[in-house]
Amino acid sequence: PLHDEYFTASSGNGARMNKKQIFVSGTKAFEDAIFATGFPFRCKDRFPAYQESFSKLFYKIGGMRRLGSAALDLCYVACGRYDGYWEVGLQVWDSAAASLIVAEAGGRVTDFKGADSYLQTGDTLAGNPLMHKHALKIIRQIPALQKKPL
Image (cartoon, rainbow, N blue to C red):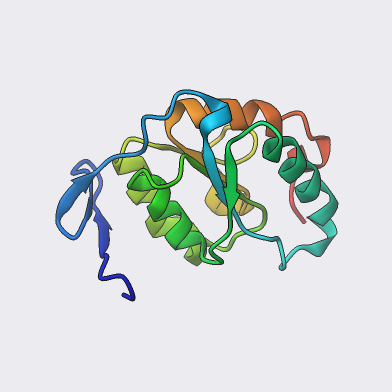
């Protein structure tokens, strides 16, 4: 790892970075939240819906980041560096392990309908529970993101 950071978790045992327990952020104000995202390059047909979600979230939160790694973005949610993350069309290998790390750090991970099928749909929303709730409310208002992915 470039930054000498090693993220781990096991179900029911919490999440850790370099053996130290980590937790999602405690951010309470949506306008102060920092979110991360990635571009849906595998499903370009859904890009207009993604752009709409980006625009709606961008103007309501404190900032937006893009590292280019779903797994690292999710780990940054788990350790509190980011308050939330969303992306369209991920593959299982992009997010499965890191989603467990977020959950074990006290975060919430769902699809864009608020269900646990994000590994099947590839549509992933994660965050501390309050930021997840606020972002989900916005994303649910975008009809094209509520359709079943192709």
